Image 1 (cartoon, rainbow over the protein chains, first blue to last red):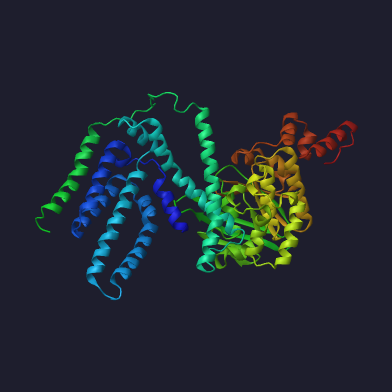
Image 2 (image 1 turned 90 degrees about the vertical axis):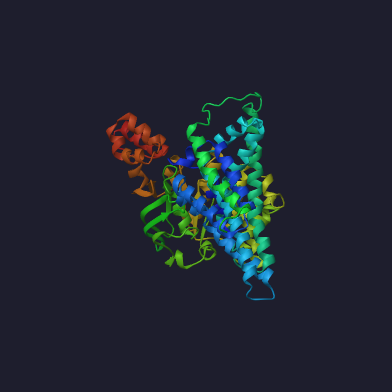
Amino acid sequence: MLSLVSSVYEIFVFRKKAKLLYNIDPRVKMVQLIVTLIAIALTTNLILQLFIMAYLIAFTVIGADVRRILRSIRTILKMLIMFYIIIYVVNAFPQIVNLNVAFQSLIAIFRFFMLIYSFSLFFTTTQLDDLAQSLCKLKVPYHIAFTLTLSVRFIPTVAKDFLTVYDSQRARGLEMEKGSFLKRVKKFLALLIPVFIVSFLRVDRIAEALESRAFGLVKNRTFLYEVKVGLKDIIFLVVAITPLLTILYLQYYPIYF
Amino acid sequence: MGEAIEVRNLWYIYPNGVVALKGINLEIRLGEKVAIVGPNGAGKSTLIKHFNGLLKPTKGVVRVFGVDTRKTTVATLARRIGIVFQNPYHQFFSEKVWDEVAFALKNFGFPEETIRHRVTKVLRLFDLYDYADRSPFTLSSGEMRRLAMASILAYDPDIIVFDEPTVGQDRFHKEKIREYIKLLSSQGKTIILVTHDIDFVVEEFDRLIVMSEGRIIADGAPREILYNEEILTKASLILPQIPRLVKYSEIPFLLKHKPLTEDELLIAVLGILRGDGGRC
């Protein structure tokens, strides 16, 4: 549980790096993300899925912080292996060995893993202020764009609260690992209630802080630093989506697969 | 006095790669009153989380009453070392103040009768007995902080760590906290205080540990450290009121005797006026 919360924290915290993906316009990365998600959803062939994974890894190595991405997906990967075993056992029952079920379960889990990986790549390399500005430029009203990015921004904060609450309850002798399932659920309330209370209080404070600084008074908001789509972004977009479109083409018009 | 905590060459690196502690060596004896000060990010909170095993050393050893923290559980260590965290909201979840105080006692498996006795005692000590049936979330911030302390002191740990207890407290409540610390100390408890509030520590604490960038840069008597401007600058600490006054006065006698409190300053000044070399 603890490492899962840490992984979530890693995914949604932005730390600027001098690498390619950090300097690409968020709108371009959004298009890349959408095309990647479509490709992941539509490909059913494992080899094509491996190509998508190779594509994601290549972009991670070229344009992102490899260590951070690895840290953010490490625990999720462990969880997915556990899910794979559960899916396999449930579907293969009463058989012990069923290669077809094993293969289909693998494709399903692998697809889910690639979805998480894609989002991780997007959020670890995109500054949320730039994302809000990009959404505004796509004609999304500022208060909606701001609310969306604010909710994403607070995911790591809530994750951090969870870790702090976990520490303070353990310091009072709470042992989550001990006891029956029901007892553990009851113990879990000792973690959930403080996290909810702290989050609600924070929401209240943020609302007051926003209102007291005239949030939403001006409809057409300006930005100090404008995000702009340049030639570099267009070249990136072409290079980024061509392999994905090729994969999608091969899914429906297979040549070798 | 026996050794309560022993830290040997402690290094701690967070999963995100931040090196929070760099080779800490430290011994805290039973019954000692120690204040740990330093700027934000100095590693103070990381260090205290090693004392009850919430964090395990990346390198080095932490022993609490001779037990290696890596080889035991947090719950086992928590029975002897209580940490009062900075934000009470991060621990409250019970419907009633009474249940909040009883929570740790139940975790440690105390008998029902002992729980009743201890909760009553500690709620009376912290002036919270009248609120026993109220929700912890309806208390004022000062009361919440007292409740957080009460919930730790109820199980009577040998070592008590206070993480920034004076933040957001008015003078009256600071005095109250000072009194609780005095009381606990008189009972032979080991007190460790993590704070930015230098003025709070000057009177009560025999030992001051100054941390900066994951290292201990000074460890000794407050009188020596608080008159050492180099250390204070390095740790981004503001000179407390009396040492600041003495420094600006440039009176050699005062600079020599290094008074820390108003009373000590007064005695020294009276000594100068009488010409008998008043003692601090």
